[in-house]
Length: 185
Image 1 (cartoon, helix red, strand yellow):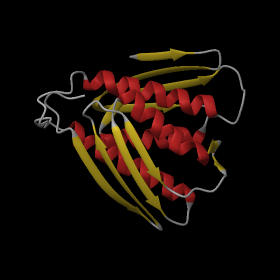
Image 2 (tube, helix red, strand yellow):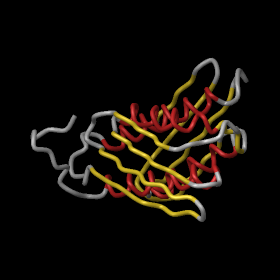
Image 3 (cartoon, rainbow, N blue to C red):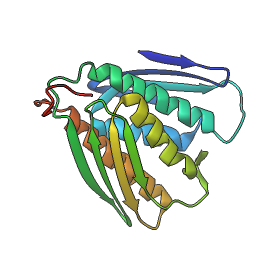
Image 4 (tube, rainbow, N blue to C red):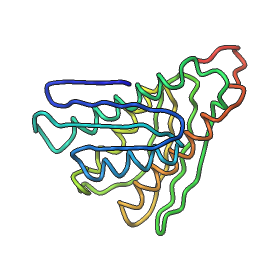
């Protein structure tokens, strides 16, 4: 289990491959997106987030959940031996379409291409989505690329989380962790 406590938030994340999943955050859309990401990644466990002091529009909760998720995923991957390493997925969702590609080789990088309006859905400011991805990628020591398009911003972000989850599932599947260097990272 990974825990993170600051003056603003308290986050606890426990991840495992498969099994039941329980996610609770003070931001309904964040809860929905984290559940979606983990379910499509084939991960079980729990994510519990509490906001201890309201300072802004959820920035600290979203960021700290991404930090904790990334660190818990990094711990779950361990030495990253015996995994496929690479994963990618394309997800259509009504009017929206998302692509995600990941490399779990231990080198953090991120890129998100998605035009999102400056609005909030269920307490989640959509301008935080690229920041969530960047933070998750950095803490998980993963390369993450996401492209999403569509008319409905909810569908666009949800399709991106589904695609990222499926890409993670593929990358975590048993495999050889290919590297011409002989080591990852």
